[in-house]
Amino acid sequence: MKILVTAKRVTDPDVKIKVKPDGSGIATEGIDYKVNPFDEIAIEEAIRIKEKNKAEVVVVSVGSKEATKEIRSGLAMGGDRGILVLTDDPLDANAVSKVLKALVEKENPDLVLMGKQAVDGDNNQTGQMLAEILDWPQACFASVVELVDDSKAKVTREVDGGFDHVELDLPAVITADLRLNEPRYASLPGIMKAKRKKIEEIELSSMGLDTSPKVVWHKFGTPAERQAGEIVADVPTLVAKLRDEAKVI
Image 1 (cartoon, rainbow, N blue to C red):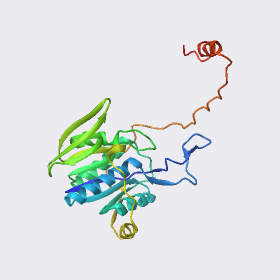
Image 2 (cartoon, helix red, strand yellow):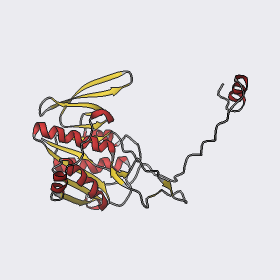
Image 3 (spheres, rainbow, N blue to C red):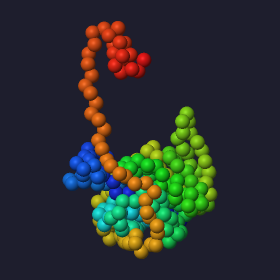
Image 4 (tube, helix red, strand yellow):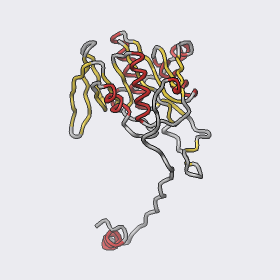
């Protein structure tokens, strides 16, 4: 079995970001980067499947040369090899799904595992788009993944009011939710081994794909600061302010 799993490079979600003064984007100076947390969960799930089924785990990313670090992180956790599609251009979900489709056709995996969304754009679109253009079964927001054999997978999905249980024919696309697992820390031997594992680099320009964006970001801005609250003397005053100033009643 072969599993293709994504490792998107994103800004550290625990770091407060700032918008450039001209509103053209995010100020990246001094910002730390890491693997998208949902992709990290997908990598962990791929490795667990590998440990049970002797699968090959291929960690892939699309981005600048610096994304090698995020691929190495996945390899240190237990991935076997990596693929980096090199581009400095920002790509929307539609373009990324096309790139991943080309990698799927090149690698012929039995399963594609991805995070359900990336914490930078928060779009939650790429996995669904990839499944559509591949014409593969898909299961999004997976909280449990169980391989029945090499041809089927059972997936539990959290939905409003309960759980949804689906069975998929492989190959398929599955996107990982937060509760799927707890990613492991890379061991020192794993980190040392990752340095020797192969990462294939492919120039996006050589793939012959139309990656012109369907979605264009025109301007970034910061949300308005919340006004400080105030203490009111009694309930009638509170009701009056809610009715006349806040206009919520």
